[in-house]
Image (cartoon, rainbow, N blue to C red; front, side, top):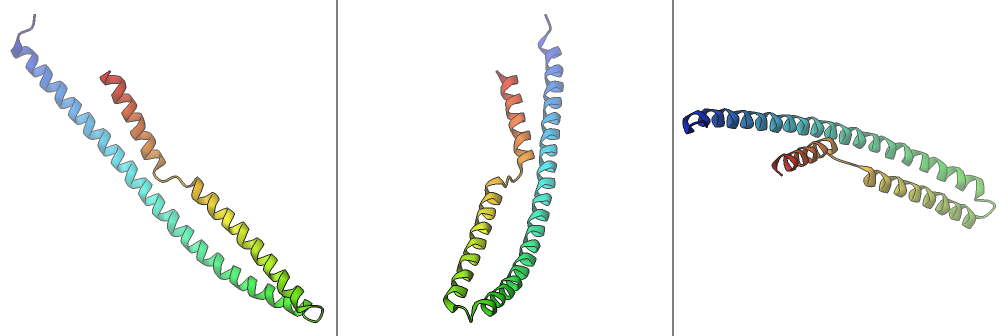
Length: 129
């Protein structure tokens, strides 16, 4: 049987290796988190500018469509011209609302980091039990 003096160095070495491995895992997870945060920031920035550009051109197209419909239908029936505009603009607004809801529902921030943390948690549970 080993003496207490012989087991202490083994225990100290094992503790050091465990601490080093834990620090390496934490550093990897932190680097992954930072990478995903940068990707999220870039995606949000790109999404913002695409949204601004889209809004400008939708506004221009809406003004042109309004003028076209009013000019084409005004002599026939002003009420029909304005009613057509309400239907067209309402349909476009409904479509854009549905797209926005889909985008918000499917958005997953930091999914890779969360998956790695779940794996770490499962591995730790398995090894401790």
